[in-house]
Image 1 (cartoon, helix red, strand yellow):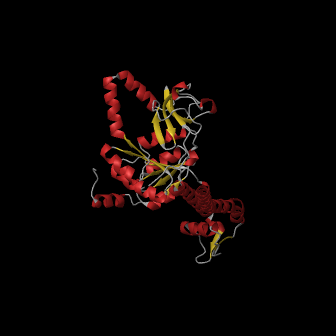
Image 2: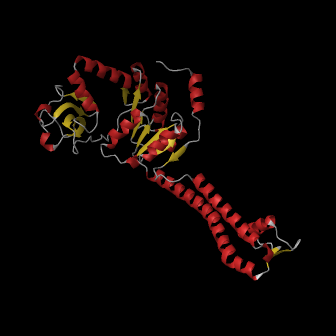
Image 3: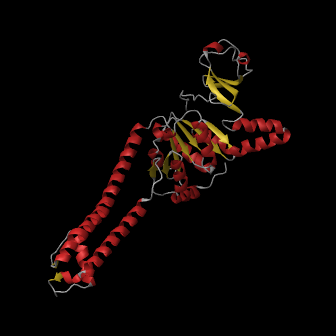
Amino acid sequence: MKLPGHDAIARQAGEHLVTQRVKLPRKVVERPIRQVVQRLIMALVVLVATAFVVYADHDGYHDNSDGSVDLLDAFYYATVTLSTTGYGDITPVSDGARLTNIFVITPLRVLFLIILVGTTLEVLTERTREEWRLNRWRSTLRDHTVVIGFGTKGRSAIQTVCATGLRKEQVVVIDPSSKAVDAATAEGYAGVMGDATRSEVLKRAEVHKARQIIIAPQRDDTSVLVTLTARQLNRSAKIVAAVREEENAPLLKQSGADAVITSSGAAGRLLGLSVLSPAAGMVMEDLIQQGSGLDLVERPVVRGEAGKRPRETDDLVVSVVRGHRVLGYDDPAIGTLQLTDRLITIVRAGPGARVTPDTRPLPHE
């Protein structure tokens, strides 16, 4: 198997040791830091405006220290007034200054307090709301799908799984890249940023309660480590993993994967098939693409098909799933179809052509 040494794996884990966060889908809003900066600028504008209003009428104010009010005194008075400190060392003495305090300074003071207190309340409210959403999400999340790696393979896998009727709220994406997690949450999926080879990251995604786990990172060694960790946390989940090199597939199965997809081998076979028979390659590509042309779907045997042979059904049956065995359509062991069987068929893509997930637990050694 082409895996780096222990030091390389440890170094990779160290590089991915980042703050692990759970991001729930949400509407795109302005960044909080930008909102705080804007509020701060508004507060400073109110402060400066108040200071200049006071300085414009500085003859109507009295300073207990020297009797006169200069520009610095005006800013000092504006600061202690808007913050409601009010030491009383500078006071309005003329009627005009007092009227200005009533109709101008007091509204500016209220506006100043609204800006500062409103920012604090908004931040606290947002934190409380986010924490409540996160706790509620964790308490209600059950039998969900965890996808590790939001690259091309991970995205395609999610699209295929969601085409079966799985709600986006039941999908959790794990990726070490913050941009990938942001892209996942923007599409309506929950995201966890961190190194999926670490058990605490998988626990944040509630892997121990997941029904199925899709492992699609960029490296084969990462796939093996993630599979081992995920299988340790969840003994009953269906784990499907992707690898680049075909020679690494047996190791992934030994690590606990129920199915292993070799991306480079599959692409190479499709290329070879397209060279030998462009039409056959076109049909295979059509089957791979979800929702267009022909689709490969799995469905249960209906009552009217029980007792018939696979070729006697209306659909084009490719294989029959009986128990934990997958039998070819011409396998003599099939005999006739049973109500407990499931059929893998090729159908014309359409709204009604949907894969029915098999919820039965798979055996693990």
